[in-house]
Image 1 (cartoon, rainbow, N blue to C red):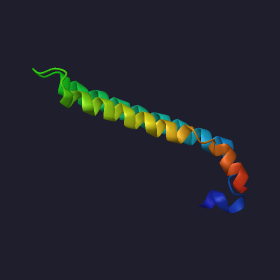
Image 2 (image 1 turned 180 degrees about the horizontal axis):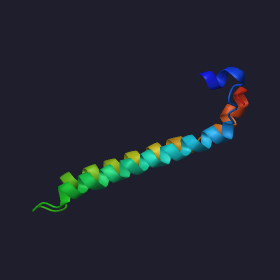
Image 3 (image 1 turned 45 degrees about the horizontal axis):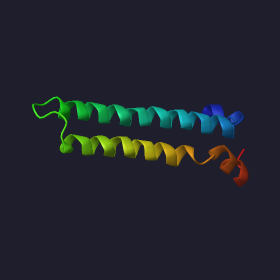
Image 4 (image 1 turned 90 degrees about the horizontal axis):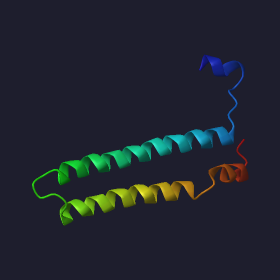
Length: 86
């Protein structure tokens, strides 16, 4: 708070959008990794690939892909610029 008293730290819309996008990519990678680890535990049993193992695979990858698509389909920089944010 002391550093902000003299002059506020400038932030740029594109920089914030880029950093947030990178954080989202890392988070989605964690979702894919979690899906792979869960599948590894399901598939490496005596039954192997079953419908019980395929459904979480499709759901996990589908959910991660849909979250990626919903985030990156919207150009956030343009939205912030249109609202008057700097």
